[in-house]
Length: 541
Image 1 (cartoon, rainbow, N blue to C red):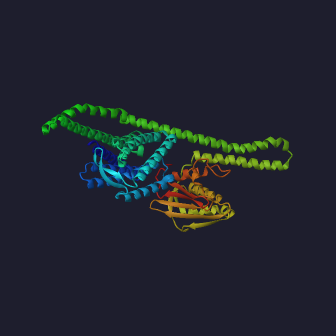
Image 2: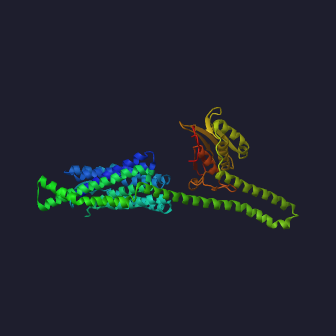
Image 3: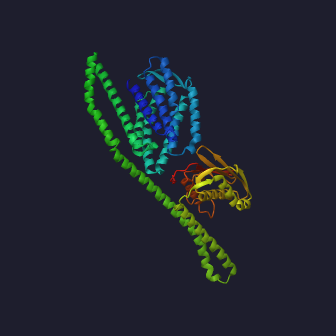
């Protein structure tokens, strides 16, 4: 019977240690926080499970069974939350996550009633085992479905992501499959199915594989020098606990077989067993060093560096292929038009109308190629910043004056939600920031070919000055929103698709950011976020 409280204690320790460790390294990271929620759910379930196994009365056992379910109820959704953050898809699944937490709260309300945990009674080797209430089966079904869905999401991401992320996901998947397979052995006895929870200890397996992903593949971006010390210590602690509990259980077995009762005899027996098992403990530690850590700190660091280089190179090849295909496409179209007219030119030398049209098309298409090459040069060789103290409000006003004719031609009404006479000093390159604002406003005007409202609004925080450019145009579909900064991506004909890429590069070189929100058929808001104090040597982040 000591196996079950021991397995719960082991699960408690490993979830507590790893959960706190990951959270402490970066509390602001949504990935680290979601893992902490997951580990905390397992910790609550495990610690209450341990106390329940030591309960001496039916009332106490029932209370701790319900208490452990407060953690178990949140395990599937916190795991789903973590997986979604790991694959970087929180925005797409945030409604599902919210619904999951609402459903979990519903189960939590039912938890301390007979509708969820009915009672406890003897089953197999257990004196007090819980009986499922009316709604418990619904929880088990939803639990299984959410875990399966999470594993499917991880599996899909595994097939398409870069090498380091793939290795991280591999160990998360492997650990999850083992731990949940073990954890699910707790359910049958709730429904009078005579299968004991023998796999409960496998829940702790997830910590070993998470630790491996942290160490080898920089999961949570935890520094390698710091992480191995604690991960290694945690593993050795678990081994040591297992070692001493094994000695204790074996001594009890020998005590029952041989019938001795004295303290001296027990001490001698435990010492003998310990001596016998020391070589085994050393072998286990040696295997961990050899197969788990697979090398020294420097060797692991070198392997990680190689993986990072491989990922970066793969990304460069992908970007190069995209750029090459886009350039070919952009240049091929005007050349095709020019080639078509050249084909008929010998036959139309005396056709004045044709020659005039040919001259116009030739000039337009050459200008198009020239514009493409100019933008491409800007994108690949950005102009170094020439910064100076600039009144950003005055710059915004001067930009609007420059674009006055464009605004009138499009029948757009401008609304300025800032004080014209306000003085806000920023250290920026005024020419490049002006170019950025011009590109963004022109994009907004083109989104409103039949007129509309253009709103320029400013906002200040302790560290940033923010320019919001809002239009009432056609908006951008959600599926295209994450592509608009990609080079050569454009939804408009005769556009190179480099304007926003260059704008983003300029703002990032100022240590700022561009954020875009959009609602289809309602409009788009582009926010330019500039810091009040820029580092001395600005560079793109």
